[in-house]
Length: 133
Image (cartoon, rainbow, N blue to C red):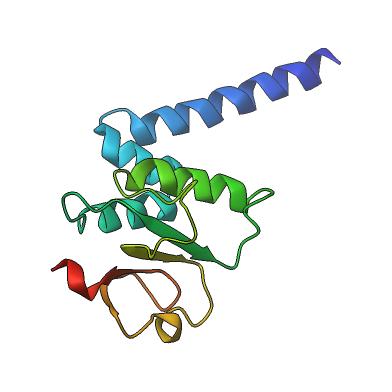
């Protein structure tokens, strides 16, 4: 029993040492890219296209955002894409932004009155209403 505990302790130390070495000298954005990954990079790229005063957005995804992991992705993106609001918006209002995250055939789903401003790949993009610029 003591040998098993000792082996686990050594493995835990090795894991945390590697994790610390990977993040020790990095700035916060680099740490977030490492820990969160693609949702963070996608949200930051979308946020860079924010048009002042226009905040209403809609997230379109194939994930079930009522349960994990879709709920986690939706909340991570909502946090890092702010001031574009993709949670709790009135669905009767025409959104300023359409945020496609892991959506099959996303490019073909973009309405004619929107233009694609960020395209990470075929399934992840940001479309902005044409009349905003």
